[in-house]
Length: 563
Ligand code: ADP
Image (cartoon, rainbow, N blue to C red):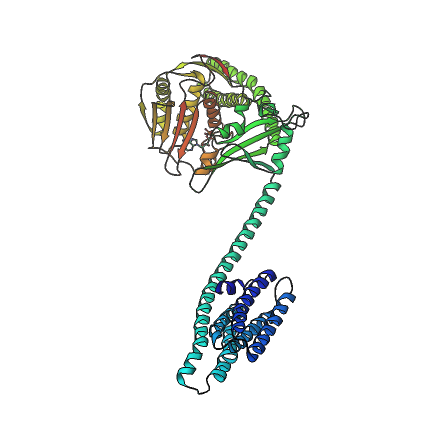
């Protein structure tokens, strides 16, 4: 019955009807048996009254709306049920004493529904409808023992109500807590959805194509720009081609093999910056795209996803190309007059003998030396510019031959000794014997001249420069270190860009066009090698060049190679 009472908490009408019917059945059955066993006038009248009370309660329950009885009905129905218990108790006396214990069921409904007020009402109702009538009817001589006997039921009810109220209070607290955490969870979910929307909005409006792949290489997120780019690389007659069917080309216009494409490289575990390619069919619609790949780690630090960012650099490339063309043309045009200047300076120097005035002869000789040095500097710059142009077009021709880098480094340093002495800088060597590497001797001399020349140029008097060479598992490693002024992190990230000069270099009297390192990098790249710099402001710099013992895609030890 207690279970029935608890179930009665359900507001659903069907549940209420079933539980009410159970209670009525449980109450009426023993009454019928008892009255039938000892029929009498008062018993019959009392039972009829009890049945009437139950009938009214049942009609009210049956008439209640589908969602269950109203609040008022929740008061009235249990009250009628308690009254019915009281009437049956009197009608079936003395055998029906235990019938009154069934009053606990509707009393519990009141407690469960109306908590403290329900408990108070239930106790009052029991006192009025069961305890008081019983005392009046059965205890003609009021004794303490008699009163105590009839108070057992209300006292039991009070204790039961207190226990149930305690349980309900704990349940309410737990419910309130769970509601609170539900509200917090909903708020967090709403905030998450809001920031997700914001992120999506930013992503969709970016003019950089974004593609996110999961660790298995499946596309999980793209943005508008990326989708446009994708439609550009899809052939017009095939909207869903395989990777090899995509219109992706190298900068020189040749088809880019699938394994060389950015997504494939990133999938193979590579991260990179600004890998350039052409997207779309050749023609005015084709775009030049620069791609950068990064890995995104999960909270445990394992690979979660791969991020690819595609930037349309067609305009920048065209501008750069136009700029480079101008530089290349001007440089080319300067070559011939510069050669003439050098040649005629030599002629003039040879003709100096004919000047009779010795003072004038020595003055002119000095002027000619200055002119020749200037012309030579200009020639070197023009040559660098033309070479840089070739490298930018991927047309840097290399004459590969087996080269002893250690030896070359020693020769280079010896060539710089007089300058080092003049500047008061110590140059140390730490050269180890190493296997030959396939390299272009002239270009490698250029690399060494640039690195050692810069170290001497930027290191202050009294400084030290160290040139080291050693063999590593990856190839021949050449390092040029100095304890000069060093550079900031931002500067070190930009020094390989053509024409870039650090602020201190620009402010100093040390001349330069900012081309040497860009060219050095192009030459090293063309050899399939790698150049890096570690530097700290005030803490010197170390340039490391790594050349592989075999150039990828090249079987022979020597030969022509154009990159
Ligand atoms: P530059 O003609 O200016 O020397 P480079 O391309 O050779 O051009 O070098 C680019 C810039 O890198 C320089 O202007 C200078 O700011 C910086 N740099 C190069 N080497 C060093 C070095 N050893 N120490 C400090 N700064 C250096």
